Image 1 (cartoon, rainbow, N blue to C red):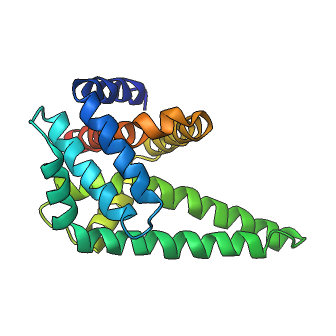
Image 2 (cartoon, rainbow, N blue to C red; image 1 turned 180 degrees about the vertical axis):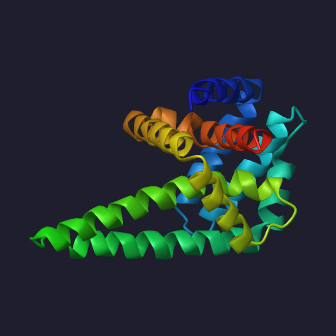
Length: 199
């Protein structure tokens, strides 16, 4: 848990080594988020490139496009899952928002908890996906869920710090466009590898 800031510092150091390339890539990734269709493939490609940078490999935009192309089906399936799960949870929160009584309050807490859990699991998904031999969607999602459940304190701290970083990026504007995607991708790779090394 206490190693998370150190891992983030290592992620920022890795970002600094390729900061010009990653500034451009982060901007392209951000644009892709507004297209919906390209959001998930761009995220997959970003994490794939982040792994190469962590490993100190030479990278270029060709590596990113190849990762997007090679993982297109898996990325779209993951993206569809995000739309469905977050959509259902958001609808449930909205539907019960005006309801009174203990049962409605319990349901609101339950839906909110599910949003948090789903977010935390997906922080692990793509870094874990690229570490696996079996890269099926259900296998990766199951392993990400196990990783979260077996490391509850670490996962809560990781998700909390990620939310703070995302909030800071959104509020600052410049930080979001310039570094947010890259820092999260590099950090995610380092976090997942540390957990796997401890096994």
